[in-house]
Length: 255
Image (cartoon, rainbow, N blue to C red; front, side, top):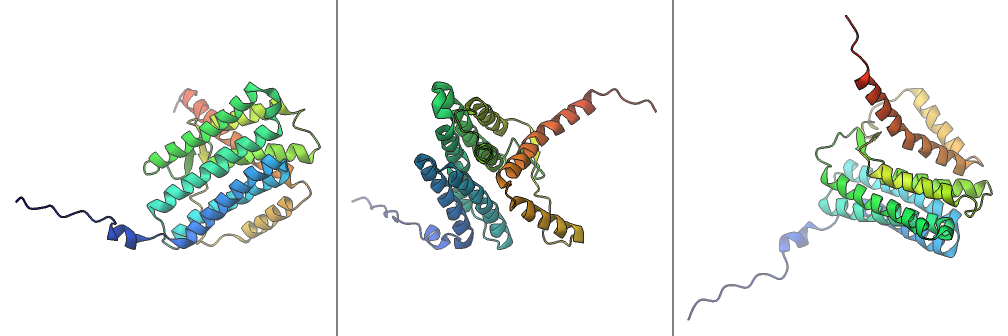
């Protein structure tokens, strides 16, 4: 009789031993929780809580990568988990928030605008994951999805703080949503702030600037200030692109 081939093990012991790094995953899970919480609050009509939850998710998302690098706990699982969490927090949640707040009232153009944003976030994350090893670390190619989310929900939050209902700003909301979605898949470069080394000493004035930032964000105009800051960041990439084009088209100077 022919010899029977040994059966393959049902479980790979190497994979079992590898495990998951808990600390960075806790921050990613926290970001995912606040993204889901924002969706729930948007469905219930509490858009201020939904907007603030997405901003908290941004903080958690920024911390998980920092913690993983500082503790040397980076892993392929963590990268994939972070990307899926980002899609919920900065793709689906902002699109649903702005749709429920303003875009629902304009019919088909409203959900198309929300879909453009959601698809832009998915494409942005997919491109980021596939070009991570070859891209310039100092710049993002396309508007980062957390910044795009902050732009959209920041607009909602700022308009609510000014007492402007979604019914009166629905077309402006649609423009901001589409602009954020298309900016994510553009080739415009945005400064990443990743070359800032937190381990090096900084001038004393840097500490004062941090204190001023906390004071400004804690003011009664928090929503308007946050929206203004992310508007400046979203436009900065286009400003840099225009300056680059101007330099390229300028005639060479005679020596």
